[in-house]
Image (cartoon, rainbow, N blue to C red; front, side, top):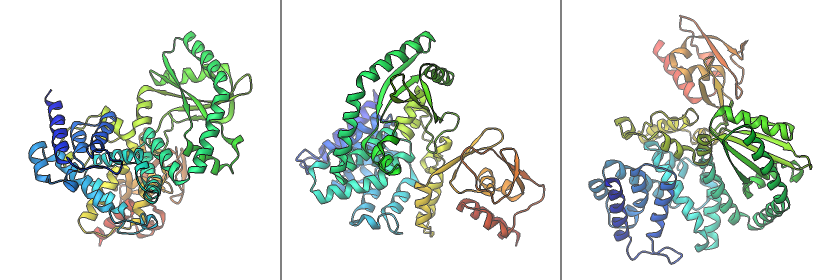
Length: 474
């Protein structure tokens, strides 16, 4: 009851503060912060984030001060509202999206500074952007295009990096409908036509699979998954606009209780239909770079239909849909001193890049120079997962080398490297690591770090550690 009271108080304060303000649509302004609040609530975020969401525009647009929020709702809520406000002001005045990413004084840099303190700032900002996209029709065409393009190039990729699949899909599709409305309608109609023609077949397949899973006593839920318009657009671009290469326009998603049932369900499906060669992807054993887990298999039915199945557990499904927000839901963060200073504890391995982002933000706040191109690379580039011999997963940027892996494990290990085994074979330190490699670092009791190693290192983190070690020896 006490928790609900805080949220009700925040709604009352925001409603009074925004009184007399209206959106471009003519709706009372309070409809926007209430919608943003509902979005983060649906994502399962903690109470402070929900309160900060409803108050996120008060400092910028009303007479409410940060101290007022701190006095009534505490330091954490004030901290989050301040972060969102700074992020908003950093974005104002940016007129040309072409300068958005590369320039040192770009929004991305401000984004890093703002989110470096607390990643929940970014969660609120993504919810804010989602509602703005949902109500984009009220704005003039030039603003629609600018916001839509920005969403496709920056915010949807951010949602993807946080593995917030549902958010990424909705953001990208709405934005694409404004960036290229003609192409959007063309592809949307194509998907609808395909689904209409496949409906009877899909019903038959669902019945066959349901009965087969039932015979094996596998508890499951099954639903259809239609490919999003923007995903189809991107996939067609990869395959020279050849629709014959697109096998996952519709998919059936099977959600089971545990990992064992995932593989049992896969066996059941393959006993019913012929699997397509090279189209079985086990993202459970080897997760995607953003932590996504599921088994995908594409099969050919008896009447020559090509259908994709996705098999996962309930927890994997929650994470696939809500990503980082689901992590908050499953591992509710206690507001420790570390958390207050922005160090999120126990992040999933695939989200360790957030910690790197926070460290970079701390340097920016301290006035140190940072290469914005490298920041962009770290934020948007593909990651690879490699494994220690014990099976621990280490997440590194694509292009990393064995010394990057060693320094990521610990700077002490990096300082004593004498060799490396990759997948059980002795390898060269110049070998680029690949997704899924098992990497074993061989060390000596003596320090072996030397200046020539800079040519064998890819990551900024490892270079900084090596430089510090060499300087200590002088």
